[in-house]
Image 1 (cartoon, helix red, strand yellow):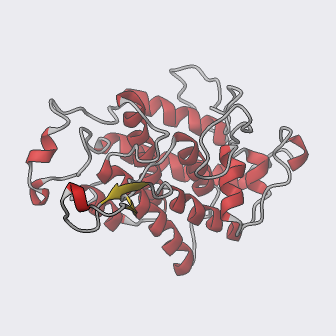
Image 2: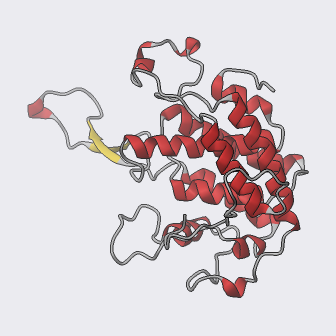
Image 3: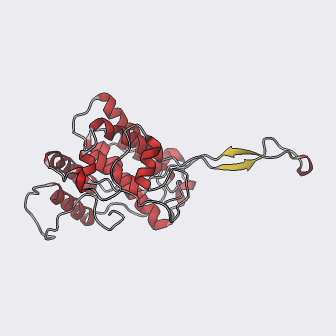
Length: 283
């Protein structure tokens, strides 16, 4: 959903028992959502913190409290993602002139900081305030206004957004007694990867707009993005300070699995699935 309550990518309003062949991307998105509700996406374990007592070598996911999507769901998702990609490639979205106010012009492809501010409505590292602009969704006309090279650059930027700006803390540089302690120097804390829902929606839309056949260099961009997503899954997310609370963090994990599966299944990067789960891909 976008900030005004509309969907960045349209979903067809079809009967729940619809059995026909989807004719466009909107109808494919309807089938994806229907399959998602029919099959379990994730399962909760009894104690989400018990993973801390399990050696890493015997842990299959490293995801706090969540297991990967079920086999049935992920196979249906991969199939529908490929069909949606084909339909989006053959569709004609509205022109850039139909974008809401404030969407044009968008930054140049290499302007990472400007893209962060463009998407989020405020510069990176700035606390939210009433003066912020509305966050922007990745809408269809905008996607068609981006070249394939620009889309790949934007995926690189999104990967870097997984890590929040380093925070600082005061840690003594060496042990001393309280009476002789020197002034403490700021030391950066280790950031925790975090994939916000907004960034996840952008990433999914960008991935869906790429063709099935890419060069090795282009695939490496997708793999680096997917590895960033795996980092979010392993850490349990929430490191950016924008995803808080149990329900919000669980939704972050759902979005991360979706982005990872888009790369794994959309371009056959099966080894990344094993990296994330400790399991080989099963058909």
